[in-house]
Structures are given as structure tokens and as C-alpha cells.
Length: 70
Image (cartoon, rainbow, N blue to C red; front, top):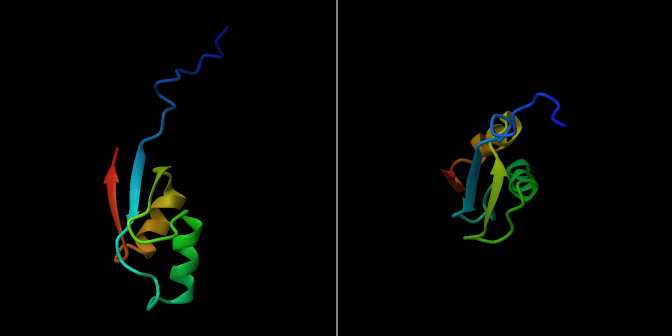
């Protein structure tokens, strides 16, 4: 039995975020944001849903990361 929600319509877009610069010389708030995104080392990457909260976090550290849509 379905609840009337189309599963294809509820799929969110995903983005791949890769850390390309070191966080050593960045501000503490930016370091915490990178850690909250799940990035630890340079060239590490994560796939996350493209929600407004995640996109806002990416905007804060845009000079440290590379983003591509999946």
C-alpha cells in the first residue's frame, strides 16, 4: 500500500564535496564547518544531500572545497 507519495519525486539531489585546501590557516569556525561536513584530510570527499543547510555550510568554506553535483 502506498501513501500517495511518489518515491522518485522525494529523491534529493546529491552533491560531492572534496576538501582541496588545508584548514590550518583558516578561522576556527571554518574548521568546525569542515569537520561538520565530514571532511578530515585533504582530498577526502563526502556525498551529501543538497539541502539548504548543507549548501550554506559549503558557502562558508567555498574557498577550501570543490563541489560537484551528482
